[in-house]
Length: 353
Image (cartoon, rainbow, N blue to C red):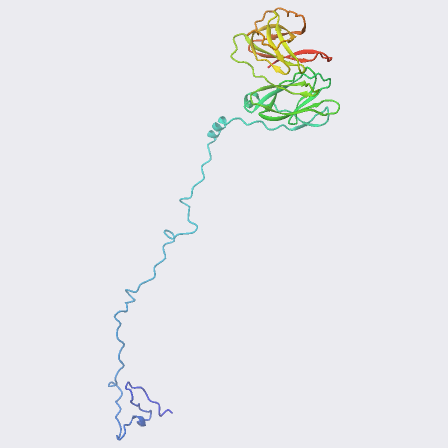
């Protein structure tokens, strides 16, 4: 097979020479003695060179390059964004001097609630009242006191929202003012001895900056009642003058007159649990007496009290007589309490409001 292998010489249909130098049968034309093969060497035809491609860009100069990545330090966006420059900073701490000024402008805070304490009398836990400074807490607190006008023989205790305010109060006793916070509170009256049963319980309103007297009285049904008296004193007093009023806290159905020593009506037709208005009174000592009112018509009352220093003039049927000393710039209330059939009878309690 090696003898029949031919070499491609660039001409189609032409046979190539064998390695022995003899021409192959395929290279001979019919009827001829043979065909001279071209000599090899410089006369051998060369393969055409590849034509140049004019559209191909020169890679060394015009070859397009991939875009370069932006500089990370300047323009490349980051996630999350760098807020080192635009990030809002927290507000600076306020100045200590400003805080002190603001604290002066702020209203004072109410005092903390009281802590429980144990009473030695009954070995039970109770809440003691709080006594805030009057100047700093009057906008949050009012004041309250108790007058026991009930003819019952046993003592009672007064609590407000479970806080003990008055203990062992008996007929005719008047407590001092205690502080109570503004708003509605549950007022409870209990027996102080024997079975500590609840005798009375009411929800009453109290107003900041206002004084109140709670009066424990007997009701027509045989139980107890607790009217509230506002001790709002009169103002714009004349020189060397005080204020005075009268209240009937005796028994249901009663109606009385308060008379001056010269027989003039000071306050007339004061019914049960009623309180008169204040009247101006020149400072001095005033003798009065009380009579039962038999008329529901308006009585001519004197507009102002002027001390005479005289003893009370006894009427035909006075219930009792008493004397009141009035000081300039002060306010007073006389409470008529009790009844005509109990051991205590009728009596008066004059309080400075």
